[in-house]
Length: 248
Ligand code: SAH
Image (cartoon, rainbow, N blue to C red):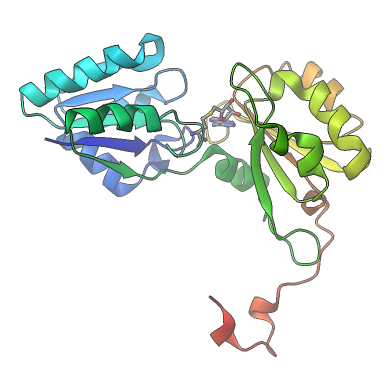
C-alpha cells in the first residue's frame, strides 16, 4: 500500500503526467483538492475507486481516510493542483504518514505559473533581460518571512510569478512600482489552461483597473517583468558560433 501525491496540473486534464494518470487509474482511493483540481481528472478513476474531495476536510480527516485505505490494502491517489511542491500543503501530510510508517511518493505536475507562461507564449528567462524567475506571494493567512518581502525581491528586477495574491493587486503594484517602473509590463492569467482562461496584458500603472474591469478575484497568476516586453537578445544556444557542449 502506498500514497501517491500527484500533481494534477493547472486545469486541462490532459496536462497531468502519464504516470500520474496511470496511478489514479490503479488506485483504490482518490482524495483530490476539489477547490482547484479539475473534476474531469476524476474520469481517470476506475469504477470502484472511493473518491473524496479534501476541500472541506481537516488534516486529521484526510489522514483517517488514508488509514482506512491502509487497512484495506489499497493505494491512495492524493491529487493536488499544479505541482504539489508549490503551496501544496503536502509536507504536513507526509509528516503524518512518516509517524504512521505509511509509504509515499510524489509525482510532479505542471505548475500553474508554467501554464500561464504557455498561455502568454512567453519565455520567462530572456537573455539580457532576466535569468531568474521568482515564485512568491504576498501575505494572506499564511505569513511571508520578513526577509522575503516583495519590496526586497523587487530589488532583483527578476521575473516575478506571484501566486495567491490577485486580491492584493493594489498592494503588489504599489510595492513594485519603484523598482520596476510604472510602465513595466504585467500579465494576469486567470484559470490558465481551463476552458474559461482569461489573459490580461497590461502594465503596473493600468493593471488594477484592468482586473476590476475583467472581474478577476481568484485563481490567477500575476507575472511581472521586463521579459514581457519581448525586447531581448537572442540566446547563445542556437547561435551558430556557439559550442553546444556548454549546453548543460
Ligand atoms: N500547487 C499549485 C498552486 C496552488 S496555490 C501550482 O503549482 O500551480 C493556488 C494558487 O495557484 C491560486 O491562488 C493561483 O494563484 C494559482 N493557480 C492555480 N491554478 C491556476 C490556474 N489554472 N491559473 C492561474 N493561476 C492558478
